[in-house]
Image 1 (cartoon, rainbow, N blue to C red):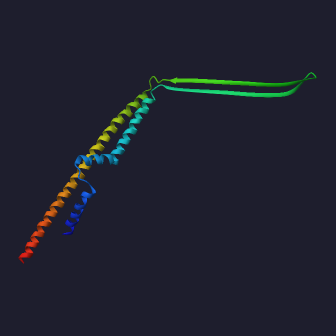
Image 2 (tube, rainbow, N blue to C red):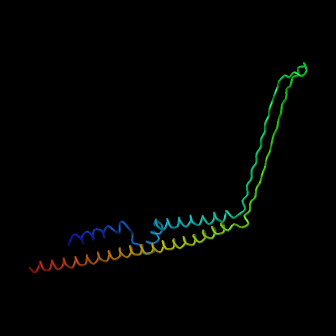
Image 3 (tube, rainbow, N blue to C red):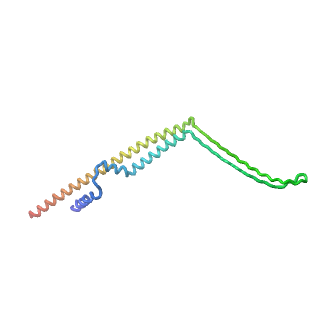
Length: 177
């Protein structure tokens, strides 16, 4: 019986060295910074919201362009015989080509794109609710853990008081005998 209160006493004595006393709001802020469920929910929300941005981008004007430049040179030399006469033929050719193009496309009406944008926006709203639910869950988990620690500290204090009282009774009974 004395081992358990002794273990609690040691734990309670070491507790202030390990964790400073904090109120519920400080504990919640620490939990909010390091909670993986809330972080994952916020990341999913950002990802889903990017889908709405991409759906809107598909409806904006699309501009494209291209440019090309080609240059070629050819040299030829040779001798040709025409009617018994020898002709020396040296020729050189230079050519260059430039092409430039610009295209602009604008969607007038495409029901599938409007539907996709609307559905992505609704998914964004849904992800907002999921983040809010994750935050509510964090509040519940944090407060439950905080109050459980407070209950355990009170239980430890009661066990200490009970141990002290029983020790006094034992000492008193020992003196009587």
